[in-house]
Length: 582
Image (tube, rainbow, N blue to C red; front, side, top):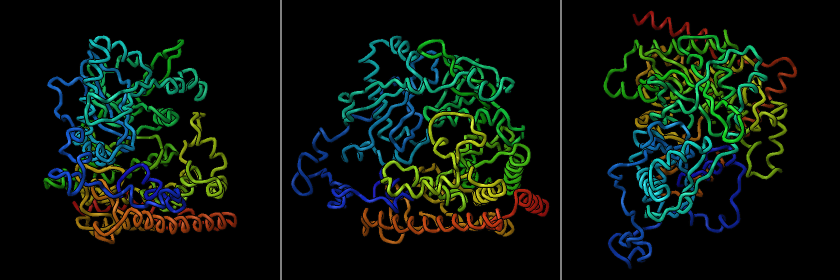
């Protein structure tokens, strides 16, 4: 089964247990999935002239980059539909984030030749620019820029006046870059949703410790690192610029959190600047984002497998990082009274002294299955309750369950920032402080496994994203972890369940059954396996939440239901092992 956004609801999310395909899809279950055969040698045996790659109209005109390219593609998001486009010819490039968007559903000929399947899970700047789609977009933008603006000064004037987060939409994708039409989509709604300092002062109090401000156009983009993160230069110094082009409520929640956390050496420092952008209409000075320190060594996700491959992953460093991470988590809970649901290698960077630093405090959480089973139980309910495709007759039951868990969930789910005390993560808000700590310990256990095994993630081929160095081992299998740490990791991850990857895996750009040969399975079989898996998981989740509710009402519920160690106990075990290792 090919990877696409449709696969999220039909396979990857628990909605797969409840979603039924429309009648026309049921009548032709395989028609959308079987690859067409493009004959490169004959027009009669395997296909016609219309579908043959010998036909010039079925071939890309060229993928050679222009001699002096005007644009660069730094990465992608939106499961292969959004590309970070950076103009290269401006004296200073403000972080306008005018990304290029393409429609997901393209003719198969275009999908295959432009490698759109690979773009679904390939996001990093090291690999994505080499894909055909990225090179094709650079060529398209080159032609569009020259044809529409004539001289580059005209484009610069246009670029600096567009609303933040505007879009360039490729409406009619073609293999011939000269035939592609680009539609400019100004994002006025995003700029209107941005809050000014006065509004934040009203919400947070007049004495709130906000950092100094810097003008948006003083920032010069060096590289787009993520859909919400740019590396920028301000007055010859490098910083990270954090901003969101959707869901700005998470930006303001993170800004508030970082400004109020008690400092810790292994937690990202408070923001350095508030970035102010003057609105295009009126005199509104909106808070578009903030800057923070740039840690050039990168994330543990990329560092661990690289060190392991070159035989440079030392036990002393593994223990140091594990202890630092545990101390930071314990500090956040005991001194700042907050939770950290985003614990994964992507959110752990190394400082210049090779110490770990935790980043990303939006508190959105990791995707379903990566979290503790008690968090997943609530998250499955949330995903079904808020699904926009399932009929109300299906979602109503789960909305009622969610209402019992988080009475104000509807207000938290909308896009308006109202300064909620605990953020917007319903699955974590529903938990007590003890339950939250137990869930953090679970995620910590999985990260410790990655650190001691020296891999980029707990799964061999995560559906959402492929890595430059994919793991060759999957949690909870052990190869390199010392016995004492295996015991600790097993204690931290008590209650773990089998995941969808045990049944369905990503291979290149397809979802496949792990129990059958690749050439002996259909898309319907993959969907059926996903439906059965998620139906069983939803049943387990519902029974767990019923038990929890019943025992809570009787005062009999053990908030540490799986009897995991506390963060303090994990820290003591790590330090004891470190002392023995010396």
